[in-house]
Length: 576
Image (cartoon, rainbow, N blue to C red; front, top):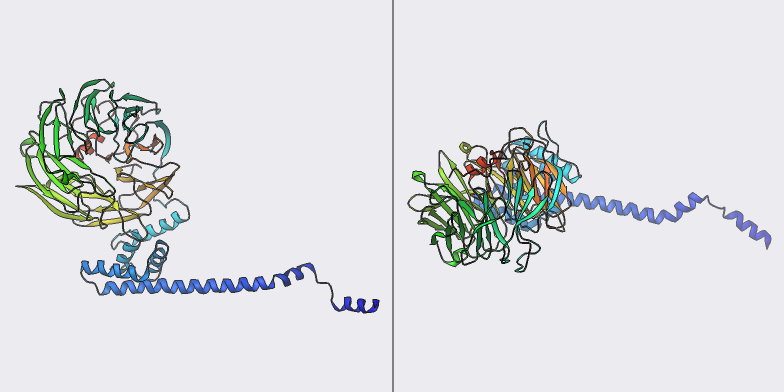
């Protein structure tokens, strides 16, 4: 018995521990190898499908010579391949790697997928792609000599709640904020009012609040050595720089526009103009608060709300023959009107069926004269000109219908170039928003952004290269953080700054403390105003949502105010 056991032990030698482990793992290793082979096979199949999608897109565009047919071909292509963001990115990779950027069909497919478009400029396309890869790897974009933009956090200040329309007015070393207080649409909010922040260190104080708790502010606008303050409910004040009320009045109904400060009767004192929910534009004397004129410009239907924006009206200032001023009005309900600032007489009107999707901007050039550019809900930016009546001409195509999002237009460069930048929603698979730079007749570049935009953009020379850069903020997934982007005037990302807070206001760029260097202001959802230093001096083309502290939405005024140094800004008056 003992001998048999010994022989049995000899017939099964003990394996080394490593060999035993490998034998036990053999089935798992074989399964892993099979899984790897399957993954490789799946990658090859997917890669082949991405290549097939690219070839199919090119083939469809080959049969679509007209623009309307191109749109139909792209829609068919998207339906056939169900292009989600991840698969769209893979198809874009295939287009870059296997096809020529000299092919207009390839570029059109890339624009549809990524939101980017640099025309036939292959170097710009390649630089854009390199930076996209760097951003995906959590690296900063590659920048050329002199392009780097630096943003250093200086201070933060408690200012109460704000939103995308909130006026942040930098004047002579202080920032004046139209605060929504502790809560939006709270009738008992004791903190609704004007907050003043010292631009040097962020010290904040409540400068003015309504003694009757009249609710949220519609906005503020600078006047001579003071501010106009207007609530959504229709109460209005003129206060001095120290916060003392000089007069108080009411317009009698809900206010839909930012307050506009302009001398309508040419007596040397700026007056207050607002648009109301029942289709009226009201001009109020800056001297005593009495109505100068009231004009009904349309029915309440012309001021109806649009999804994503609510009922909004925007006023802007333009020149008129003989040195007079024209007031331009655009509404979400689709009304575009021109009024004489002197007496409110209606000079003309027109209708946009899709409604205005954001503030209008007045751009005046020697070639075209004053033109009010209106972003429209159908994805077009229309030029409104006043002849015998208001005429609306489709000028630039943003692309995506702005049915549920804000769109805005800003001037770029000097007036003779008639260049402009538009921002708005995007309907491409990989992007939620887009920036589009336009020249006289068409887009010169497009850039898509993955997340939605907050408010507007600002344009200024942020790095001292004598070319304007643009700043935009986007909301990250989860709505608890944001990203601030600096984009070159040629459409390339220069810096991506992650912010650990949710931005709710449009950026502002100005010298806020009088040191001669530009700063950037952002308000967050927690009621804090943040200031970042650029460390650079430079020109500002369009420095805040409304262009200037009087809310004229006029390109010449925006530029003129930004060139006015601290110490002289209370005295600044619009050119028109």
